[in-house]
Image 1: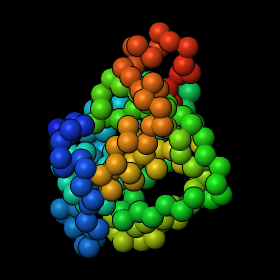
Image 2 (image 1 turned 180 degrees about the vertical axis):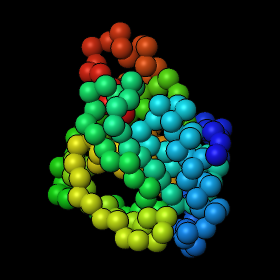
Image 3 (image 1 turned 135 degrees about the vertical axis):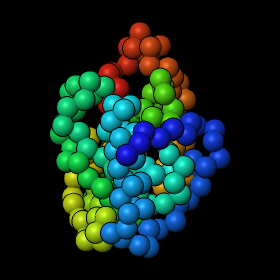
Length: 178
């Protein structure tokens, strides 16, 4: 279909809560999802939320087989998740470096639940439910935050751990994950 423009941090549309999808198996929904995949691929992303392309609906996509931006990341199955719900499994959280297509060139150290259950619907309205951990869990939490108007810098505890990739790569920090 088409590569869409990705909204950048500061755009008010990125700070809104999205509406649930009500209709499934429609050409409109299929078109949005195709555009999301085209846009994500164009920018070497591992995930994208509908509000990042100006669609205020509860739709996220994610997946990673291999990606030059994340050469050491574990595989994440390609998923379309509509109206997602996330439930932490336990209280354990871990910090990891995140980036975002809406905040190009920057990274931040963000604490996320180590293990989660997520559920939602497929484009056909079928139930999806998984229990995941590690990078997969981090990606899902990051993308679903977009649906509630939350960008990862809002979750950074110490702003000294937020900066431009090239400046961070020159410091003693670990290699960014997302």
